[in-house]
Image (cartoon, rainbow, N blue to C red; front, top):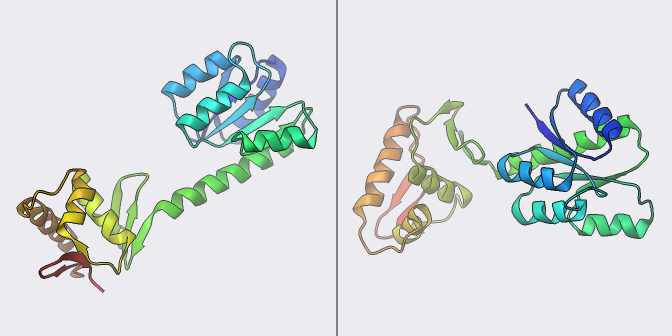
Length: 224
């Protein structure tokens, strides 16, 4: 379920948005002050925030600043300001879009749909593909031909992420180790070699395609 946070202190406007978005298939939560919004944002993740600026407690501008310091959640600002300079300032402050009050609810739904589409495109752009292998960064999954690699570990995922991100490059064992383990490489190769072997075994359960090639004396790369 796509969850949206509505931050609006006017009960009638908040309820109008809540009912329209719920009817359109979204799950919504409501916050009626900037303080309440910040508390919810600290503990929950949302796919989008509808944010009024004139709020009791913490201002909408400060909520937006908090969001941009912590998250990449799309934000549509609800504003009574209709001057061009005000709107430009909102976008420069980190808002993804703005809607001027009073608004048409159909326009609101259309603008939300645009932000959701952008968000989905961004998520897909982070996925990595090589031949029939797809690495899904957002769900920590790796599939070959639609079949998921079994019991992938954090280091195995990171190794494939590095190799698939640069499919033509030969990586030294030092580079792979430091990327996957986030530690300084001390010259010990057995740990990395075991993980490469485990990845190959898991791939072998699905396909005869090798995928990882050993470059003797250097390290590893994806098999051309």
